[in-house]
Image (cartoon, rainbow over all chains, first blue to last red; front, side, top):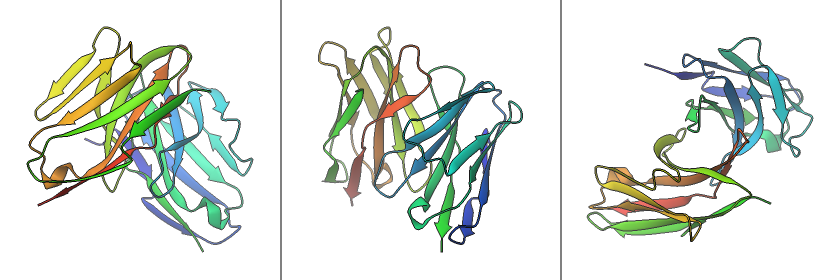
Length: 110
Length: 111
């Protein structure tokens, strides 16, 4: 039973063309996170929502935005993707200490 | 600045060997430490250790938290090729929703 679902699993976009990644959860967790992970690196937190409260990491570029219209869904918008934004994007949820990750979306920027 | 450091960064062993992965942390106010396994996909949860639960075991995997030394180890006995993965350690701080991740240890098990 999928608990954290990410769509699409693979996304190819062109340099500068906006892209939206989607995450949904069936766990009813109040916290949702977006991470960026590049090859051979640990996940890097971009931002998280505690319910509707948005928390941005200080070093997250303005190019990255997020929306959480309800408890179940959270979106990552990349307004003008650059080549350096090619990465795996991981969504996670948490109801306590544990974080549960979705399968990730691999973003390619051409 | 809160920091989590894992060692070694990379480890190659033969099937059947026992391995020990290390994680040390320097954080302002420790709440819990988590271990994840990551193959070619998203991290999957292994263990969570807290002050009230400093030792966990599941099959061939076990983990211990040493609050005095501010560290944790992850042991894998009788390793199998399916144990090949990146193992991530992360720390949760009191009052914060986020995890601080270490760099990961890339474990390779050769047949």
